[in-house]
Image 1 (cartoon, rainbow, N blue to C red):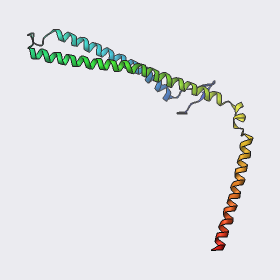
Image 2: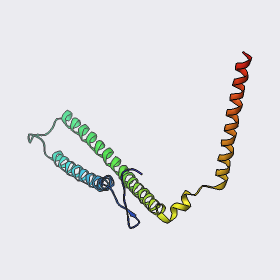
Image 3: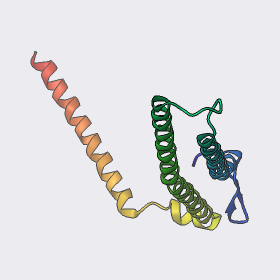
Image 4: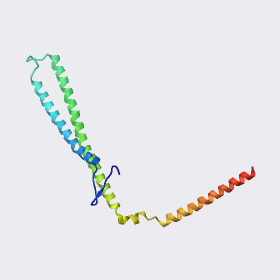
Length: 158
C-alpha cells in the first residue's frame, strides 16, 4: 500500500499524500472554470474591437481581409480550446472518482483483513503443502546424494 496508513475504527486514515490528491481533484475543475471565464471575457472584448476601427477611419480591403483572417484564426483556436476542455473535464472527473473508489475499497479490504482473530486462520498452512514440501525436500537430498556418488565415481575412474 502506498504511503503509511493507520487503521482507526475499521476506517483507514488518510495520509497527507491522499489529502493532496483530493485537493488537486477539487482545484482542477476550479482552474478550468477560471480558464473558461477568461476565454469568455477575451472573446467579448474581441467582439467589441470588431466594431471600432483603430483610428476612427474605415479599413482598407486588405486590412479588412487580414482582420477577418486573424478573427477566424482566433475563433478557431478558442473553439479548439473549448472542445478540448469539454473533452478533458469528464475524463478528469472519472479519473478522480475511479481512483478515490479504488482507494476506498482497498482501505476497507485491508481493514477487514487485518483483524487479529483472523491471523491464525490466514497463517495456517495447508496439510497437502506441508507433505509436498517434505517430499520435495527428501527428493532433493536423494538427488544431492546421487550427484555426490556420481562425482566420486568419476574421480575414481580418472
